[in-house]
Image 1 (cartoon, each protein chain N blue to C red):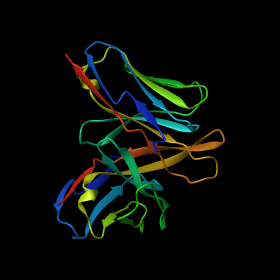
Image 2 (tube, each protein chain N blue to C red):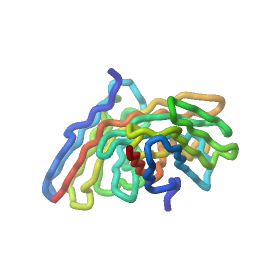
Image 3 (tube, one colour):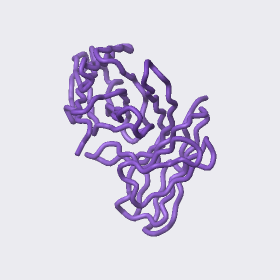
Image 4 (cartoon, rainbow over the protein chains, first blue to last red):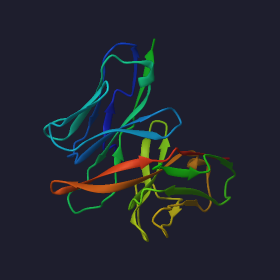
Length: 115
Length: 118
């Protein structure tokens, strides 16, 4: 079973449009990470959220973690071709005192931005 | 420059021929991991290590071995590769920091190794 569900699987938007990617779990997310990946390349760290209700922004990308810490969203405002790639959410779902150092990942959202 | 390096970046090999993918980090991180990425399945953890000589299985450890003799290196060993191990492999290292009463991690990924086993 997939610990983290990401939606949508793929997204095609016109340049300038806003978009949202969601990451959902039935378990508490103690640390939620967003990464971006260009096809076939490494992962670039975008943001980390830890507290319920937390929101962070970097340039035109905003990420939020809900109060219950079971869902996160990534929002891109006025998308550009440079935003294209695969967005992955990863989470630390280990309860206190259990296995450390493990992150679980969603399957990713493929974003295409056409001019 | 702080980074995680992997070698080789690309490898084509044949079934049964032992191979090693190296991973090295220069950030003095305690935690290191190996993942594989496959279409439709996302990133799955193979093995991880919490420190020198401390390793544990992830979600898909079958067919792989690891070792952590030095803090900076975490090689992935395929003793007898098979075609179902054709994949994109990522090494990651992370440090643990504390916010409040709970630690969390920031993981840095290597550039990936694309392995094809024929």
